Image (cartoon, rainbow, N blue to C red; front, top):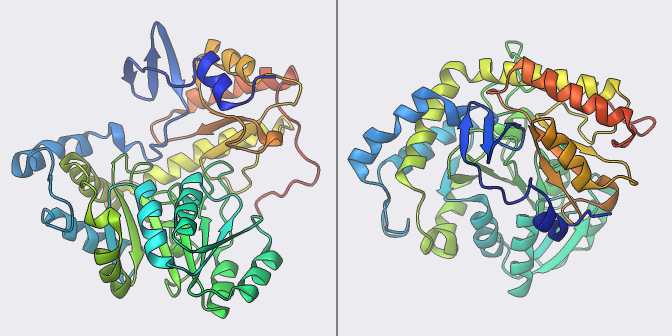
Length: 407
């Protein structure tokens, strides 16, 4: 069976594709038009006219790129965005940097020094890279299985090198599941550790709970800390705008004292180039859209997601997603080839994210579907029909008995 990344690179049309044209949430690759389920533009802001029209005025004001590093200077829109984000997130302060990957590589080593890092097994690969880099500079690195709080507490008790930081995902990038942040935060506070959470896929989608919410995602899209009803005590939240906000920009929500420390210690702040002006403009406009109709978009997104997940579960097909977020991974059966399955999806006009080993464990090899507010009901219907055909032929892994469902 061909299930690894190198096989996909050489043999799959769904890897490293050159996309020639888009039309809504459809893409053209060569002569083929496909529905795009690989985009992470959860709110559909990449296609929003209000967001698109906001770019040119900022380009006229600032040019295409503020070419000094943030250490030297920032366009006024930077601190204004940080203040606005602090209000949305309910955080003491916010630090904007270009990408989450750069944050992990620059900030994790700066915060931990020669202390102890305890990393969740399912945390994103870029968190792992940041932890490995910190280890190379003298930090101790440990890992615990996702959800294994007994092991996490044991590691916290045994940690002697201070400070201590637990690194984990918020909404998981492959399973779409939402961890119970309250129990992790409580453990970290008990043992005086910092909880460092990457909520790349939750920012813009899940948010604070309210009787007025349009879906179980909550309101305002202000990420997992507010969604969990938590405070930022002992928590550093990392998030980005390259998913729900369709922009090249990322942030940390953190205490002001820690922000000031990173301004002299994190290479990402000191030396890397800033985000393009167009990205700053689209984030600002995206926040406007979020205030005016974000909850409406999230309600639509939830309904589409529920339609897909309800169908998948009704087929008796296994999915790792039990929290109804718009990230749906579907493992294939062990005796089926991932490239063959991807070709069937392609011929049916469906473009997905393939999930090969070692990106996922061998028993989770399959594909990921990401829904967005720019998709339509009929597109979900067409995808469900393809999944029905694959399930009927045994290509999709059957559901695990007693798999947990949302309460």
